[in-house]
Image 1 (cartoon, rainbow, N blue to C red):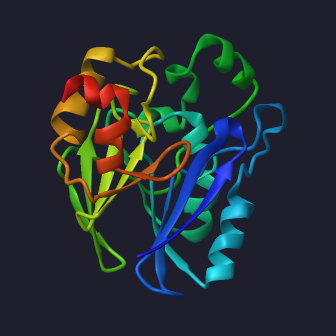
Image 2 (image 1 turned 90 degrees about the horizontal axis):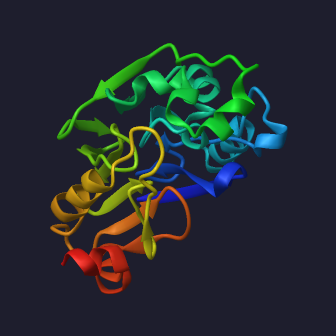
Length: 225
């Protein structure tokens, strides 16, 4: 499995480009945005297009772990540009076009003059949905807490795209609209702790990790174990 990433300037969000073989088809996860002070209509699409071009990839699908703007800003430009479907949980779908509804009032105020729209092809996912792309099995895991519709994606039962649920040494915040500390605890207990130690974790922010390292070192998981 080939993994490339780009760290978007807005909140240092990880965008992941994943392929099963060199110069093959790929998926794109969480294409975010430029810094809030210099947001443009294309976000980081040009940077992701450069990775795709350098690797000789052909994008076939885009995935969103949740509806926060720092993960979704460039989705329309990329998905429509490559004419590929976008996958997101049904609970967070509306925030692609209405991002202010899931943000803090302070941050939402920056968006009053901006227009957002869904990509042409959006597919809503629910817990347990299983998709086959690029020779990989991608299983959607509903993981509320950071947002009501947060998803993680398990790829071939060996790689977890955790979004803003699990980070190296920490977890996602739960104090924004649709966030819930109690739901996050349930997610960590029922969706994270049972996973195998050797699973590789690609988080929404920060460095890559593994379930074993987080089980040993993450204070939020240690508290629940």
